[in-house]
Image 1: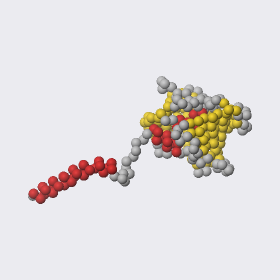
Image 2 (image 1 turned 90 degrees about the vertical axis):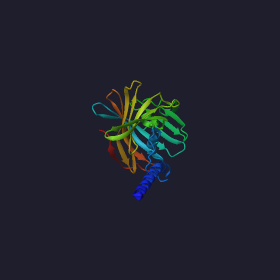
Image 3 (image 1 turned 30 degrees about the horizontal axis):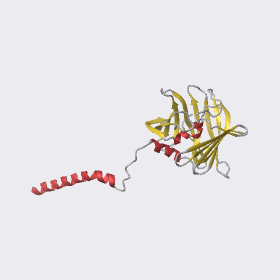
Length: 269
């Protein structure tokens, strides 16, 4: 009988010792693969940026107007040259007429320390000019330079705002506020970032009272060669029914021909 009691006491001591050691093992073990770091807004934005190509690449696209009856009208051609692997990284956004003549050129350079420099030219021929406010419209469209450059993905003032669904895709929601030192009016944007693949699906701008002003939606993803890119975005000023589309047609690498493309994931009509 005493042996049984002794063994029971020993088992209880061992159990208590294991429970006491459990927190230490969980926090100090080297192979602790179950610990998932908490999400942060800055990490989510960095994940989206990491999807951008590091090698030099040229995106060839068009800006179109979609009327309320569904009819579309081509407005401008757009060439976007990206060299995100450089230091500083360089992105050039050239707006051209449908005949191919350049009418605006915005160059954005970003250093690794976060400093950004913009250079702007406009006219025919192009001449240096003051850098526009990035929240100003591109020509006579609903799209602004923020929509085209996605500059808000680099803004540092960002906070998590929960989760939501866009067209059935679970998204992390992030609020970002424009930095004062950039060519941007004070603005707060809400971003919807797809939870699994970390791609941007929607952006909304609201005024101080919460009234919706503008909405950008990713309508289609496109696979061009081996690259997955945003294939089409749609911008709408509320409550206007007219919309502006930005459509990627081809991806061109230096010293290469345009690659065959095909539509892939669609997030809306």
